[in-house]
Image (tube, rainbow, N blue to C red; front, top):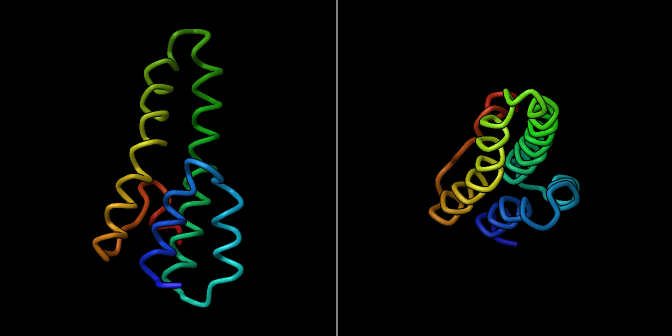
Length: 101
C-alpha cells in the first residue's frame, strides 16, 4: 500500500476504530513513517480519552465543561488536519504527543 494512503487511513481511523487500526498498521507496516504516525495517532486518542474523562468528572463542579468542549472538538478536528496533511504528503505531528515519538 502507498505510504500516503496508509497515513490517511491511520488518521481517519479516529472516527471508526481509533485503537485497532493504528495497532494493525504499526504491526504490519514496514515503513517507518507509517509506524510513527500510527503510534502518534494511538497515543493522541489515549490522551484525549483521559482528558475527556477528567473533564467530565470536573464538569460536575462546572469547571470542566469548557475543557470538555475543547477536548471534544480537538478529538474531531485534529485527525481531519492529519488527513489533509497526509493527502498533501507533508510531515505532520499530532499536538500534545508529537514530540513523544
